[in-house]
Length: 244
Image (cartoon, rainbow, N blue to C red; front, side, top):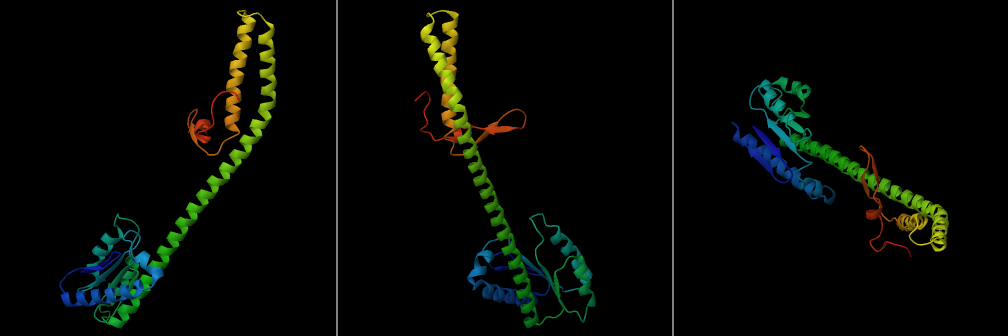
């Protein structure tokens, strides 16, 4: 039979030895209650996902537990859970051989005091592991946020420098194009070409203004698997089009 702890209260799966199962469940409830009293552990114990402890009660030969152990270790729900075996090592010394089968600890006595100490130790190791995982996850999130912040800062600096450098020659092109439109007769190919230059220069000027006001880092698909900055989505919504 097995006593399984998933986050909140232990759930007892009753086997042949009901009284022994009840005794193990009572110890688990007592230890969990003591551990939960510490505020630093309460949150971890209340979360079913990252926390579990399984206690197998040996009521027969140790060999009979190998299949349940193999099934628990192959549980597709996620990481291997802390697994304890409780039995009488004097009657069955083979219990300790289960340590090589994936069991984390073997309590070779039915002493409640010994069981309490071993369960507390297992919970302590599990809580330490869960805390370590939580710290690693928070660290990874912080690193991702920092990398995104640095990327945005780099894009903003590059955008400002690019807009500054492009603005001067673009202003000159636009000025010369407007001068040509005033000096050539309307309707001539030269006038149409000059007007086209003015229109496209205006369009380029609007793009340069947007580049100079990038505040976010948004991308869009480009050639193949490449991505480029989506200028329209990366600027403030109040940036209008056209010349100013």
